[in-house]
Image 1: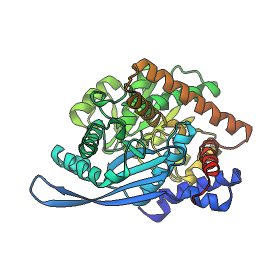
Image 2 (image 1 turned 120 degrees about the vertical axis):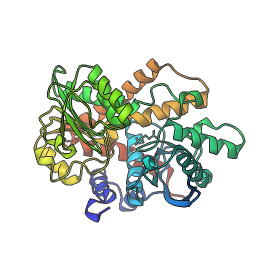
Image 3 (image 1 turned 135 degrees about the horizontal axis):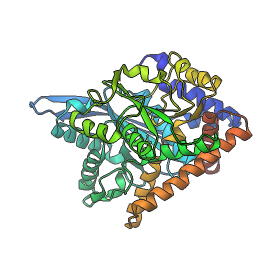
Length: 416
Ligand code: GLU
C-alpha cells in the first residue's frame, strides 16, 4: 500500500485529534495507539495439485482493557500488517462506542479466497487457526467473519480449536453457523445496524423517509443486506457497484431479482433491467444516501467533491480518507462514521457470545430489538456530543469510544 494511502497513518491522525480533545497524557496516548500483541504467521497449505504454498497471516490484538480482544478475520490479496493494525484499533473504539465488554483485534491472511478450492480454503483456515491456538479463546480473543470469510470459515476455526482442547468450544468464534451455536440475526446484523443508524439520521435531519434514493458501493455481506433491508423498507436503491463494475436504474433496482442474479453469477454485472456504469462513477450520481460497503480509502480527495448524497453511511471500515472528510464537512454531508454505522455486526457477535456462555438462545426478534436499542443509543450519544461540543460526527464518535478505553486504562493502571 502506498504510504500516502496508509490507512494506519490516516487513522492515527484522527485518533490524536480526539485524544487531544480528551486531554489524554502523552504516555497514555502512546499506549492507546500501540497494539498489545502483533502476531505474524506463515500459513503453509498443501494445494490440490500437491504443491506447498505459504501465505502470510496476521492477528493483531490492539487493546484488551475492557474485555477480550474481538474482531474479524479478513482473507484478501491486499492484506498487510498496517491495515490489520488499523482495523484492530478501529475494533477497540467500535466496541467501546457501543459499550460492549470487548477490546479490539483483527486478523488477516494475504490470499485471494476466490482462487482457492473449498478444500484449500479449509486447509488454509485450519493451519492459520492452529498457529493462533495459544493466542485465541473465549476469554482471550474471539475472531469473527470479515471480508472474504464467512460462517463456514468460522465453523472450521471452531472445529480446529475444539479438537485441540478435546471438547467443543463454541465461544472461540462468533458469526458461526446457527447449528453450531451461532446467533439468529448475525448474518445481516452489520447491515441492520447500519440501517438503524440511517433511520436515526433521517429523523434528526427531519428528512421524510419516502422516495429516498440510495447508492451502495460493494455487494458483499454488508452491501447486499443493506440493499435488501432498505428495499424492503421502501427505499429506492438506484445504483450498486462491485469489483467488476456498476449498475444503475433511476427508477430503482429490483433487489430480489438482483440477489437471484448474484447467486448464479457471483457478480452484479450482467444484471438486466438497468444500465451498466463504471464502478467508480456511482459516487457521482444524484442520491440521498451513499453507503460505501467495500474496502478502505474509497472516498478520497478526488471523488469527494463530486458526491451529491446528503448522508454518507460508512458500512465499511475506514472508507473515507481524512482529506475527503474535510470536503464532505464543507459540503455539509451528514456522516455516519464507521465505528458507529457498522457496529451492528460486532454487537450481535457479543449477543452470540453471551448466548453461548449462557447456553440459552434468543429469538430473532429479541436479537433485532436489542440490536436496535444499542444502535440507537450509540447514535444519539454521538449525535448529542457532535451538537453539544460542536465537533464533527467522526470526532464525536472517537471521543466517546477512545474516552471509554482511556478511562478503563487509567483505572487499571499500567502493570507493574
Ligand atoms: N468484521 C466485523 C467488523 O469489522 C465484525 C467483527 C466481529 O463481529 O467481531 O466489525
